[in-house]
Amino acid sequence: MSRIDLEELKKAIEKELEKRDMEPHQAEDMAEKVMNLFGYDKAITDNLLSSEERDVFYKLEEFDILTTEEETTNLPSGKKWRIHYWVLNERKIRELLQEEKKEEKKEEDDIYKEIEDTVWERDKG
Image (tube, rainbow, N blue to C red):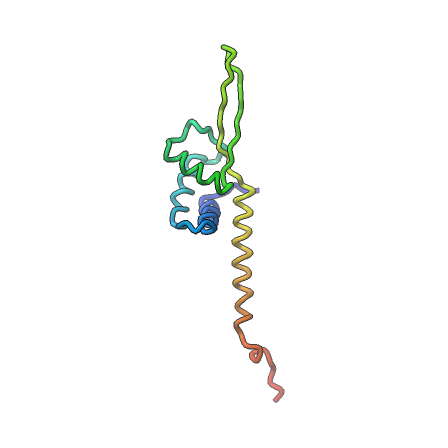
């Protein structure tokens, strides 16, 4: 399966913003921030983020577009060290894109409902 690209992520974010009656124009900026940080990786460490970027990530976590994971390791001193990761939820993003495709297909199908039945009748002449 191919990686999520900027346009796909933008569309998924737009979909979630619209569901919450929020302005979809924010989607492009949010998607660019995410893709600039993730690059070709599926996960990034939380400590790389600025507070502004983290705020965007928390919002996308609410949408289930990003998820978090945690890893614990033991330091030589015996203390535990926790590493927090942000992970692209590719499954959710693809689901949102599929919903959009279904809606587009439904709109295309609805075109025929607008045409009167008489248009389909043949001349018996």
